[in-house]
Amino acid sequence: MIYMIMIGIIFLLEWFIKNMAEAWGKEKEQKDIWRGKLYLTKYHNEGAFLNLGEKKRKLMAVISVLLTVFCLILFLLSLFQKGNGLLKAGLSLLLGGAFSNTYDRMKRKYVVDYFGFRFKCLPGLSKVVFNLSDFFILVGAMLGAVGWIKL
Image (cartoon, rainbow, N blue to C red; front, side, top):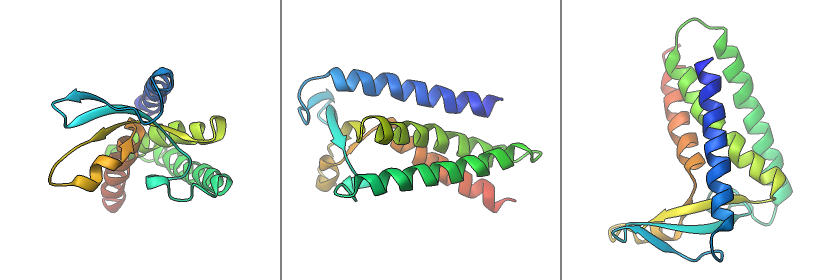
């Protein structure tokens, strides 16, 4: 039950933040929020990571749905296994983020990204805009992989 609550909380948190981001100023306007290292912005990502596939939005939406359904099936199967909380927690984080980004792709036709980083040692990173779902997906995938290996 806790894992399903995690998924719901992540989805609702991101839904709330993304709706707030949509109400912010113009797209790509930046507002520093932490010593010039972290900024808020609004960016409509029409593809996948780094706008990969932006010219094939329907294909990206289909791939997003298929991958989300695949992870959901793995998650549901894992619920019937005793133990392996790491796999279940990882899949919960991953699914919370995946549901949010997939919802955006289906409903808005783009994913709302809203913050970025600026580091002198990684100048290319300052051009990449993220949302929290991206990090939930990344961390969830890593935890899920470690949990899967332990099977």
